[in-house]
Length: 123
Image 1 (cartoon, rainbow, N blue to C red):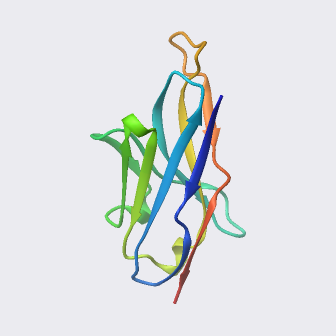
Image 2: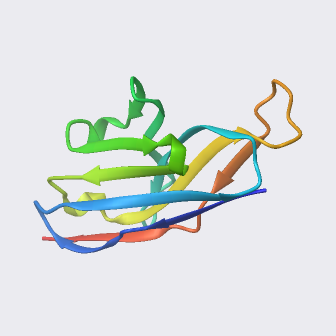
Image 3: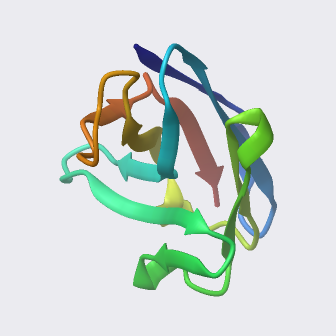
């Protein structure tokens, strides 16, 4: 089955940049979409960005224009470039992917989450 490994988080000053990487491993037919959610202390998990094709992307309002999501289909890998970071971006960022197992027909039967990587933005 599919598993996700994400990395690239860390400590950065406000206005700085980070790039997150997420790679999918295991046995599966294909991935449809990849992206990130985030959760800050005391807040609910929220969508950050999702990419399905190069021209089919979704961004949360607070990150629009600052974050860019991309993917390398051949390598089963997605990236999140985060620029102009703000203290309110501080959160655990978890990779997300959905797709098809080796046994799936036309039904998207996989939905997988990574363990998360911490992004801390200081003032």
